[in-house]
Image (tube, rainbow, N blue to C red; front, side, top):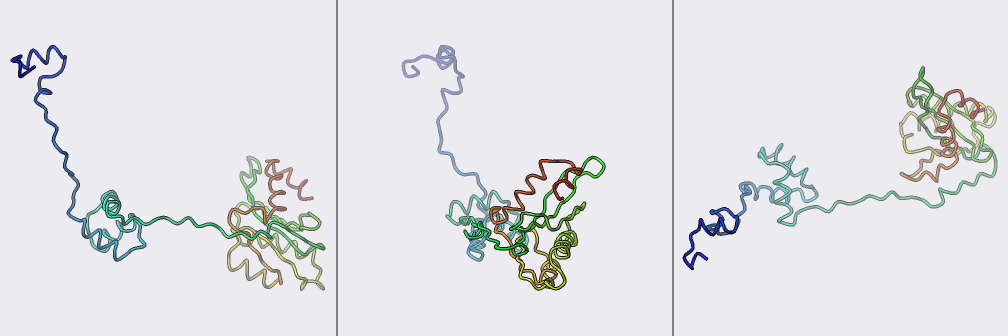
Length: 232
């Protein structure tokens, strides 16, 4: 229409567009990213090949004193193919741990900790129980405001005093616990009591099934008054 002699004002009014759009010509867009530290980022990735972009950013800031942010480092590493593939660690689980075969009492015990509601006066409390896998009885327990090493040991020592007479303290007892029972004091006391300690795998509650099932029933009570009825 312009070549035919019509004015730009008439064409814009007829097409209901702005007159400036008639003169617009698309230009190739160039990258406005700052490329001043690209080579330093590549060199840092070569020195630390196992680092992801967050650790490379930390390295450049703390060690090289370069004012770079994570977005710039991520962009450069993505363009150069330097991103490290994250590895998902899978917990090793033993299939036989899901089967508990106790031929007689006081042979295999299981212990774990759970959080229970104990009323407005007490608030939340931590319950540590020890169960006999043969008789399905609670042989030791402890209820406290904080689950510390001495609280877990109190439940184990109660089970030893009530179920193992003085003459049979050297009996072979295996105690299976969750992954939280890792303190050196807890392990040392189990060795002193001649108890074999075995921890379950991560995200594998089947290997501690008896005590997990008991704690599920306790959590449904939701009242401290009901705990004594369960533990008796």
